[in-house]
Amino acid sequence: MTSRSSSALQATQVAIVGAGPAGLLLGAWLGREGVDHVVVEKHSAAHVLERVRAGILEPATVALLHELGAGARLAREGLPHDGLFLSVAGARHHIDLQALTGRHVTVYGQTELTRDLMAQRDAAGWPTLYEADDVALDGLTDSPRVRFKQAGRRVELRADWVAGC
Image 1 (tube, rainbow, N blue to C red):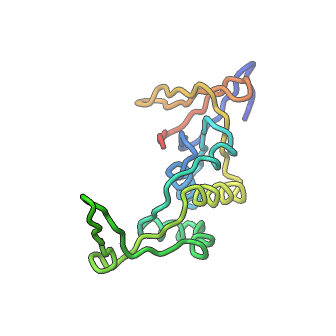
Image 2 (cartoon, helix red, strand yellow):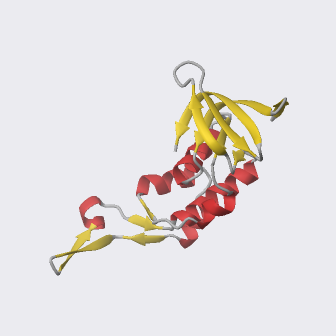
Image 3 (cartoon, rainbow, N blue to C red):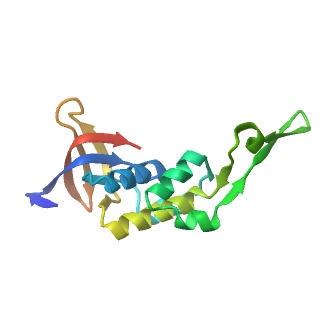
């Protein structure tokens, strides 16, 4: 980031607001395609990893993670799940996903998915700006900007596109 008095200015093709699974997955996809992008997250990296989330991934998501090079641990540790049970009025009903769709879902905690995507970003050198306070969007129709404070400094990130994730 270049410094301008008390503020910093940076430009990128795509600014992604949010370092959850959706933002990190979008970043991995853009990174693979060579698109310049920055992820902006209001919390610390540690906080992002500590957030406990559910973990059911559909086949298309699993395939995309492998395609993007972020599925190695998922392949080792994810649990294929062919169906589920629903309890209605005390009666248990089995929904056989494999029989109905020919596919299964994969049980893999989103916290682990986030960990994998964060590690991939670090290894690739893709920028993630954590602890961004007072995030605000401006000029979305003509000259998109994401403004925030980081470490007490004002930051303005100019982008061609902004994705809220």
